Image (cartoon, rainbow, N blue to C red; front, side, top):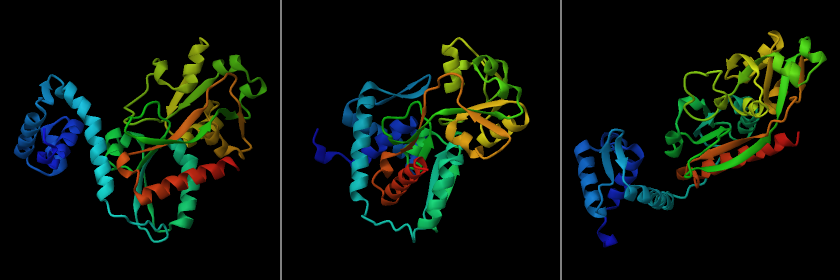
Length: 314
């Protein structure tokens, strides 16, 4: 194969085709007609001597050769896109850029409050568009339609860049007039009524099944290892709601300590360590390789890391 005869557009076509798994969707992404994309796929098949995408019961499925090509082509195009972008300085004092950040309620209630204060000081014209995890997909972040995801992640695509913002332990929160306050141990914890609160990942789904312990997260996973199970009466995705319910409804909230400390000055609430070990969680920021060298994005990442460090020292 003579590389000088390869149409670079074909590599762009293949990158989008493998990402979308559909000729129609790929054509829409590139703003070309479906026949033009179909012709591009035919030329790609001739070029690589491989069908690349095969129609199956699950739709268009990439061949082994296509799966081998995908990371190579994505890396080549990413480097090329970075190389041909004009070098532009980013001035936070004058920038009117909007940053779209996918963030959990946990991160929004802790990190983002401090971050917004700092941005208002350093970049008064910048806008933040905060999006919930269920609003977006990995694909949105990968394509740079979302600047960053800030959350606790079990798994991330290998193509993403990521950085740990901080680690956090867990705390139990309950009203000081809760009967458990006089004798707080594992036995009384298990007999009490609980609030489950969590929102992680992308595309969360429509609901929680209390019997699917493996999907309930860190707290219940550790109880399962002990052969125990707590009595969850309320499921919520909002930390402020969980803390208010703990205060008024004789319930216990077990949640990351930084979220618990939002109400540290409330005289009606007790905050204490759980009566069993729960491994710390990692709050991470993740972003697309397409934005890795963007000057404004680099400024935002440094700012987030600085704010997180300053919060750790408080």
